[in-house]
Amino acid sequence: MDDGGARGDQYDDESEDYVAYWQGRDYEHAAELAAVTRLIGDSRYGLVCEVGGGFGRLSPVLKEYADRVMMFDPSAKHVAIAGRLLADRPGITAHHMRPGHLPLDDGSADLVSMIRVMHHLPDPGPTLREIARVLKPGGRALIEVANSAHMLNKLRYAKRLRGIPRAPVDIRSAEKAAEGGIPFVNHHPDTVVRQFAEAGLRVEDKLSVSNMRSGRLKRSVGEDRLLAVEQRIQGPLAALNFGPSLFFLLRRNG
Image 1 (cartoon, rainbow, N blue to C red):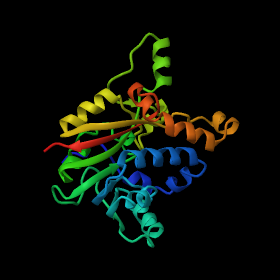
Image 2 (cartoon, rainbow, N blue to C red):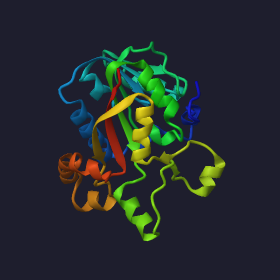
Image 3 (cartoon, rainbow, N blue to C red):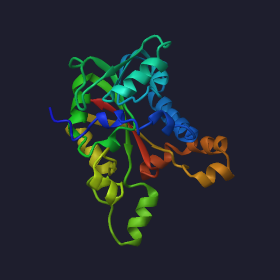
């Protein structure tokens, strides 16, 4: 199966340090935790499959709602780090995967989570179909999308009298894009919803996340106050596709 152009070995490079990347991003981490817990709600799952889980940042949270969490990542380095960090967490295991290929049987997972992965997938279709394949009929997926139609972008494009592209937008500099490396694209939510449907996944709920992400606000208002506001506005702002990150709760058809 096509992997949609995704790669995983790029994060095995010594210059890439995803653990260090999250240092100083407490607000973003907490905003994502708030979205995950709100969308899961009171549900309880048998097997949760976490796609592109990195070093296992969200695995312990998902385990609170599941009997088992199987975290998969295409980076061997990430899997090794996750194995060490999660060694004392019963019911959580870390596994290597090929991009676009989950080593699970058809219909074996109750919930599939994929957060901070779509921005590395210029063509997410193959990965979405793989998620649908491993989900049980009626199973759910929790997918985060880097949003090209966020409010600041809408203003930028409006000033230029242009509409926001429906195709993925590469947000790297021209020089970085020419060098290759890890893809980094933002997706239009309307396009993504169509791609979900084509994969057999229908949207049940959506949240707008990291709406107050600003270094200036963090310093002047304080992260605790920002997070209190963030939790109240994630739902209402979802209809506007306001924030830079959208969290979708989906259900597999059938």
